[in-house]
Image 1 (cartoon, rainbow, N blue to C red):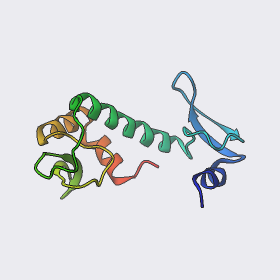
Image 2: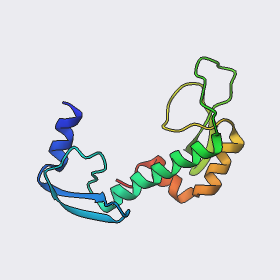
Image 3: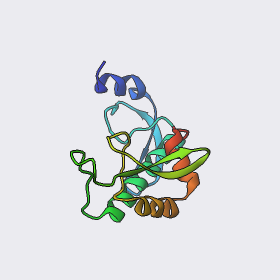
Length: 127
């Protein structure tokens, strides 16, 4: 199975949700199944936008920092749900979509985005 085949199965001549050029959620039946902004529901779009918010906050807070996976002594953190709360967690290998240069930066991302949004991203309950 390829990504193209999956996209065709999900979206070809089916109701598709997407953002228009003004950022408004629209829906229609489409033959443009390979558009990367296609979503299956309004909730799916909201999840996609929350993930984009997380990526933007990470880029802003981290500045030009990127994780050095070859240096086990360099700090790298992500956000996880532990015991029902979203918390910064130190990591030593790639396991998530976004990383932070230290625990304080991860905690600041949590403050900016809020626990409900991060819980939705991390639990995958939006799509």
